[in-house]
Image (cartoon, rainbow, N blue to C red; front, side, top):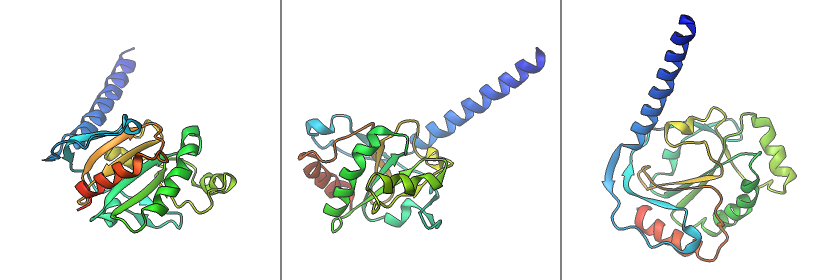
Length: 194
């Protein structure tokens, strides 16, 4: 019984420490983001943070197995979409995000999908099966993203300013194809993509 209590205490301690470390990274307030941009109804779930948060540099993999980081997109607003092959709403977001990526290819925004699937070998066949063969994604099988933001809900989308600071998020499905999304994104780019 004593051994069990020691293990339980250690486990609870590690869980608490993990929560504190994660919470600490989100407490790293760098600047006041100013007045929030008025949201259209479709963006109701989007949270524009009152303070930009500094985040650590985290490594991801691309489909060629090369290491990638969000820092390579500094100078742009970065939209990171977390998704997984087992996520049904993600299937609805992928074509919409693909369309946005094409529509915004000449603007100051980077749209970066990141799969949190543990088995990387399943991702490309899944995308091909669903006619998303041109959809380029990064991988995070060990969920390194947890050093920046929680990865316990997918889809989830996070926005980073031109210096790589976290400035907003929406957890859950969002209709990226709605006519009011693009004008709102344009305002986010103007505010944070500098």
